[in-house]
Image (cartoon, rainbow, N blue to C red; front, side, top):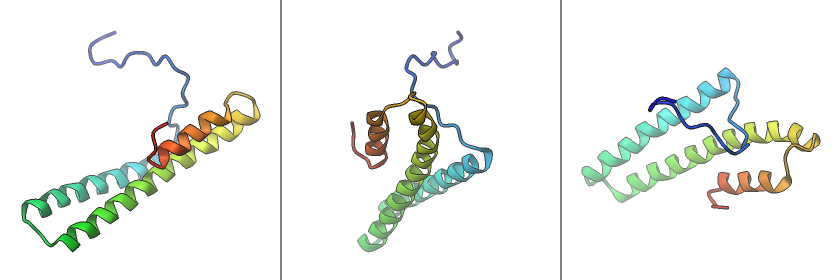
Length: 105
């Protein structure tokens, strides 16, 4: 294994396996979020009005939650089959839902 290679994954946690259009949509959302966060940094540097900053913060939070929902939906779609076939347990699914809601397990 070279320095640039990731170490092999030891756990059997499901990988994100999205179709190409959904992956592109999620990546585009994250790029927009990146731009919004940079905008927030500029607003702080420029000492903009609190209401403007809070409005953008609320938008960023909402967009991040929507992105998490999209990732969670993909996970749950795969998990339905895994649960039916006995390859996943409910606690694993609940842990993913808690993570998507911003709660640590």
